[in-house]
Image (cartoon, rainbow, N blue to C red):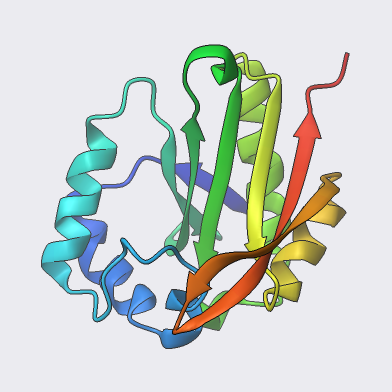
Length: 168
């Protein structure tokens, strides 16, 4: 199995829209991502990613041809400028194949070695156990739980915070 990261292209917008329109994926995303999610939303998103300098958002590609998800780093500002939040989603038909683990390891390498980051972290909704397992498999450490910090689908949820530091 080959997993790579690549810049998103406008031609990816329909496939992004198709995958994000799955409620099982959207339930784990932030609410600024619309639901339903149309091709126009995908085009708007791809356009934003193409303006990033340096690039921070990538398509996850399975076996060299299939776009199977999106992963990005949000570099923080000011005194936190050497930290970034990692976020990702993978299309449901690609779950359980180890793709997330490989993609996170690629992104961590990029963040530490190309972007000179010192810390990469993630916030995971309490009901997303698979994402927690992937982060732990990639060496991320749970730093804590923010009690009822997330409001999603009409309910408050805990957010589990994970982080990985650049090796010294």
